[in-house]
Image (tube, rainbow, N blue to C red; front, side):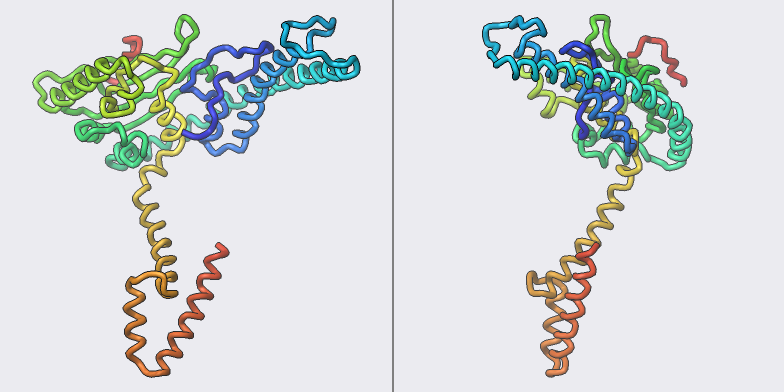
Amino acid sequence: MSTPVVTNSSATSGPTPSKKLKPDPVVADSASSNGSAAANAITTSTASAIKGAADAALLSKTIGDPNGDQHDESSRDYDPETQKILEEIDATQNEIDSLNEKASEEILKVEQKYNKLRKPFFEKRNALISKIPNFWVTAFVNHPQISAILDEEEEECLHFLTKLEVEEFEDIKSGYRIKFHFDENPYFDNLLLTKEFHLGAGGDPASNSTQIKWKDGSESGKRLKEQINLRTQEDKAGSGSRKRTRDMFSRSFFTWYLDHGDASADDIAEVIKDDMWPNPLQYFLVPDIEVENGGEDGMDGEDDDEEGDSEDENDESVVVVEEEDDDGVEDEEGDDEDEEGFEGEDGDDGLDGEEDDGE
């Protein structure tokens, strides 16, 4: 997943930032995933602001306050001149932290602005994607992390997925929702499934999702539901070693969708929000890209073969040349020189129950 996750969109004046959603990398990852040049600035300013607050507290603990009071027995003693310099550094660092906090607030406003500007383009992209059959299931299958949790029955179900949307909350930092739009299908009655991430009542990350309404009398729906129930039971059976179980065979796409155990560690949600959603085309085109890369690799391989490093088709051409007269040998040497010149050129190169299923 990637760019460092920044869990607080603005620095606090104290040493400990308030809790924010881990799956929502706020401004930094959103800007990074859209290829924005501001990504580094967002990451640097926000992270340094948080780190700066902690460093300031540590420095204050180490050198004491301006009145010279030491905070604990581990504090070191400095000569008066060094003590004064350290206090001046501490005061300067506080000013830097204050600027970092203001910068984070401004960056958040900019990101909110550009979220609104990007929205019509996301809608236009979805309208175009809807004209390509099986676009989303293809992108999911080609994504290394998502495909790792897809089983065969779920893949069949996702052939009915027509649209994916990721919506950040207005203030960005408090949460987001992932919306899966489906055509009529033999698995469930829902046309819209939504998983939402937000801050719970206690300030901790939490999630919920739309309840799946399985079709009565559908063999496909029955099989998928049974598989999900089986995996869920396996997950509960391994609750003593939950991480090991989740990372092995028990987790699947729909068990992820229904799982609300630890919203702060939801890696699949992060992948969908910060990798798949910003640019799904790159995953839809993965096979084509691999073919193109394979063609380039094949060209390099031919060059290596012609230099005697392997035994491929080019070795056969060498055999043919050896059957010719001396002039043919001279021609081979000329070909080798041409190939070396070619290589040189290359070397330069359940959600609140308020969602309408019919949406």
